[in-house]
Amino acid sequence: MESLDPRVNRMKIGGFDGELHKEAMDQLGTYEVFLIPKDGKPLESVGPVHASDAEMAFVFAKEAFSRRFECVAMAVCPTASIFPSPVSEADISAYDLVTIPAETEGENRQYEVFHMNKRGKFHKHVGSVEAIGDIDALYKGKDEYGVDKPKNVWVVPTGDFHFNAEEDSDLWATLPEKKYRDAIFYKAGEKIQRYKESVNS
Amino acid sequence: MYGGGNVFEPMKVKELIDEDPVLLKEFEARIDRGEKIEPTDWMPELYRKQLIRMIEQHAHSEIIGALPEGTWITRAPGFKRKMALMAKVQDEVGHAQLLYSAAETLGKPREKMIDDLINGKSKYSNIFNYPAFTWADSCFISWLVDAGAIVNQLANAKGSYGPYVRALDRICKEESFHLKYGHDCVATLAAGSKQQREWMQDAINRWWAPMMMFFGPSDKISVHSEVLIKWKVKMASNDAMREQYLDMYVPKILELGFTIPDPNLRRNEEEGKWEITEPDWDEFKRVINGDGPCNKERLAVRRVAEERGRWVREAINRKSENYIVPLA
Image (cartoon, rainbow over all chains, first blue to last red; front, side, top):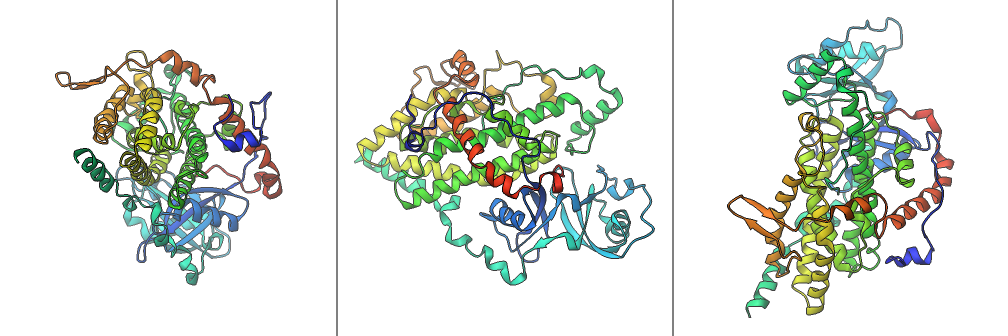
């Protein structure tokens, strides 16, 4: 049948013959996204985006994760920059599952430490440590924050994050202008009332 | 948005008895304790394959589901409705992005999932193979198809796989806007002119039968393995979800003075469940296998997007340079 979508007809998009295959890796790299929902809350992981570079990852992340909900700051890092601990459960700390020895050589640099406190939850920022390598950073994290007994730990070199400058936090100030995106904007009850009154009159 | 009409047909995977019994026992004990499974955990091959299939079908449904509504953006009545529908369609496509990432953590590359979609190898929610004739059809989708998807997604959000649960956590929060928006659209038509009421009633008449198929075949004829329920891959039976939907939405439709085109629809108070005309499961199978009114058009639109977007990907893609599977 002719399409009900006038654009499909104008563009003559019909059926198709044959196969159309995507090549392996016909997709973009992965970045993990973190945001601060409100002042005073920790930076928390919200999910991944696929992008060509960190700048674009930030743009996509802003669209994907903060177009509706509150946000005051956002950071992205390449997935490859994250060094994860093993995953534990119950009252076992993920730090206790790290058994490989720490690096013995390397330049000291700053790492950000994230904890997943329960399986299935998002990782939250707990603080930073100075370390000479990824594994060393896990041990330093344990010394500093191990008392929380997280179920998974991520350590990320601070320099690998791409984040907004503090004065750019007004990037998210447009949310109140988009009330049509909010559930509370819609008051079906008034219309239902109007319908019922019209039936009764 | 997504239906429970996903297909759990038998798959060619390693038999469960061939899995390491110690690891399998630990895996099941973990789920029994209410703990989530994370991507680096050991998992049976059947669990991995079924989850990939389910999350992938969910992602495709978000993409394809945006098409019948997307066609109405330019013709939505008024500026606010256009803005709201655009926001909704953007949400659905955003949901697909989250879901593809969750499926990727199980080992299927994203481009392979899209390849399977555009070559007709993957399924998606069957209801999107039906056409949206008028603005009222778009309102039906926004309210009553999304409502069905929410019943399904809230159930799945209690499932056992961490990345899927995290994605659904976000998705369910956004769906509340869709539901309110859709209800408002339908209520507006209900409180409108005689013509507007007729449009809405016609849309309900067109979509009711596909909507009853949305949750998938009845438990009597559907072969979903008990092990998927035990592993918290499938969280509620198709019939249970259909019942919940009817409980919640039949009164709301009737409240607006519309009728439901099923003479056998009634609530059997003694048995505490709904009686409906048995959906045409042959039609369901025919449509899900590619022979519905809009299957070809839906895939053709996706293929055009794929082909026309190729130069953009080629221009910016540095291939595997910075690709690794998402962590969580």
